[in-house]
Image (cartoon, rainbow, N blue to C red; front, side, top):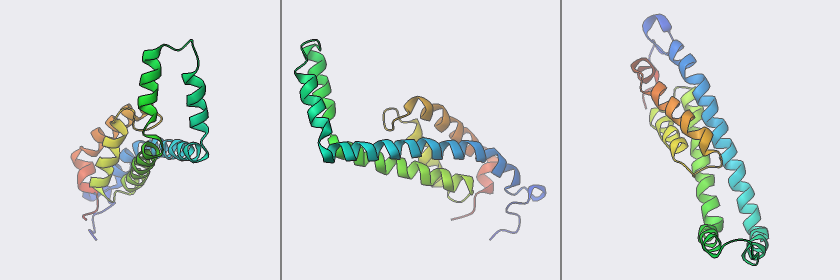
Length: 150
């Protein structure tokens, strides 16, 4: 381990730890919301409550046919879409944790990029600015140099 790690006077991770703290916590929150939403979607698919809601929606005469076909196409992914969201949300939470601890630069970058991708998680409006903020902080030279070597 580097003797200068965490020592602000030696250019270590003290200031960098402060810089990454808030965006890392927010990445974990965004990932956590995505994980909870994905788990809810998985339960809905396993119980079959989505099918009943879809059948009711398809029989509603007030919804235009074009909208019905678009909704039906989006719902085809079902459990696979929820599992994909669960995996990406988990990576975001874990990457945020690693970012906060200045441990895995690559995973922190991956988590930040995943947060930016719209419509992956349940809170894309929040995830985009947080992911961009995380990338900006991660690309600062003093933050990059503070991460533990792999």
